[in-house]
Image (cartoon, rainbow, N blue to C red):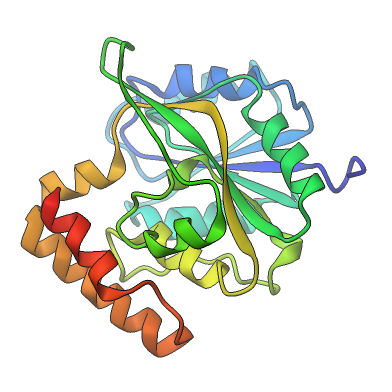
Length: 255
C-alpha cells in the first residue's frame, strides 16, 4: 500500500469514559503505524471525558475531537465519526480498552497481503479493573467459522476490527440505530456479503470486558435471544444466506 492507501482512521465514540480514556488514547498515540488519525466524538458525557479529549489533543495533533449537543447514542455517534474519517482503512476502538503498539501495523500489513479480506480483527486479552489478565479469546481466524457465530459476538471482538472501505460498496459503512445491542453484528453481516472477514491469531488488544458477556448480564438470556432471533430474521430476508438459527440462539442460552 502507498501512503494514501495506508491511512487509517480510528473511530472512537466516547461517553462517560473518563476513567480509562487517557490510557486508551495513549495506546493509540503509541502505535508503530504512524499514518493515522483518531476521530473521537463525545456523546454529551456527564463526566470529564470531553475535558480529557481537549487535553490529549494538545499531545497529538492526529486526535480530532468534537462533541454532540445531546446524547444521541452509540450508532449515531459512530456514524458521525465515520463521516469525518479520511482514511482508506477504518479501525474501531473502545474507550475502555487498550491497543498493543503493533495492532494497527499488523492489520494494515494483513489487509495489504490479503485482497479478498474486507475486515480483520485480532485476538484479545481480557483485563479487570486492576489491569490484570482474567481471560483471553480464542476467536476463529477463517471467514466461514466467524460468519456462523457473528450474531452472538463469540467469533470476534468488533472493536478490534479494521475495515478496508474500498473493498466495499460506497457508503456501505453505516450503523443502524434500531438494532441494539447488535449494532456491530448488523453492520458486519452486511459487510460479509461483499468481502471476507478474518481474525489475526495474534493478541493485539486488551479489553476490559467481553461484550457478549456484558449483553447477557444486562439483557438476560430470554431478551438477548429475542434480539438475536430478530436480527437473524432481518438478515435472512435481506441476504438469504445467514448463520443458522440454532447457531445463533444456542450459545446465548448457554451463556
